[in-house]
Image 1: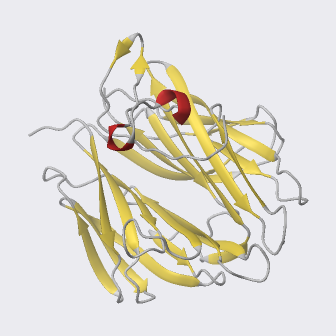
Image 2: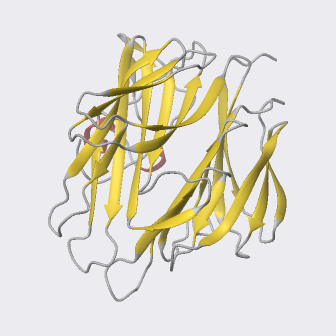
Length: 324
């Protein structure tokens, strides 16, 4: 069969010992072209676990980036936070109690219906992970690391791609992405997405922060519909304020352009650019109180674009309890 572009998510348990692990699902016999890998500390789906920890990795088969963030539970101060970052593998999962590596995986390569990763450090626990694969005949992907302009309204462009992207994911943490993995203080995590919806750029960005070694006024979050990433200030102990934000200024013939808004400061992020063929795509924020109908399993999101309803084949949802 011919599939223009497809994406599928599989949940699996990380290996408890070092070595190669195959992660597969039904991708119609295709070899994927990109993956987003997310790891949490829990071992049983739907069951609460101590500590707020998150590990994220992306790869296009050639370029890989990973970072993790942590906020330890039940410590003297309200926060004991930090994270790690690395440009050399698919996962650098931080210990909940300090900024040391807990579980580390290299990316071995894509295979039919999945990928192989090589755990070079394992903590012995079968943490749950989600892998979202992107595949298809027409799908194209690129993973890049970019630092935004330090000037308000200044732009930075990714160029040289062999395709014209029409979707973009972005992430950032406290630190850059060094070739030698390293730790840092503070939980700072931002993620967003943008889409070219029939010539209109739609985007959103969600950011959270938890300052290290403070008893009160240490955390905050923000959600915006005009940018793909934001940075929240860690100074002071009052209501957090945002620093710079990074918006997608344009999707280009061989890349994309990012614009700095808000505060004149640079921000380093990792990006997954995709061309998903002629498939429709959108990136929106939704108010659950007004955009969701029904209860329980009957909750329904509706999307209208260009005056015509269309049925999504994939949805990537993130939420917070603050309005846009």
